[in-house]
Length: 135
Image (cartoon, rainbow, N blue to C red):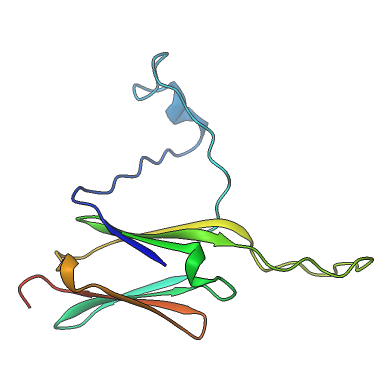
């Protein structure tokens, strides 16, 4: 697992439908780069008196395939899940396990101490402890 602390804010620009492309945000000078489709794993974020705790469901993901990025206002977890191929001649009747690249961005409710961050895998869950600044 790779961990990086970035000393700037995390920003996402989201539009609601195709109408936003024709608005003031879109101009001939703006280019859109298609990104590979990503799925978003389930995640919990809760706060205690001392820390902000994040739990991300990453069953089947190797810890080497995960990157954790801490921004001033968000925690971003991204990586890739690749499951073994099925046996030759097999026929799928259900395919509900998401594979490929993933990303989850969680806004932080307050400032954290980047020097004390702890991340660990436990039974398919990534657990990240972010100590509160000044706690």
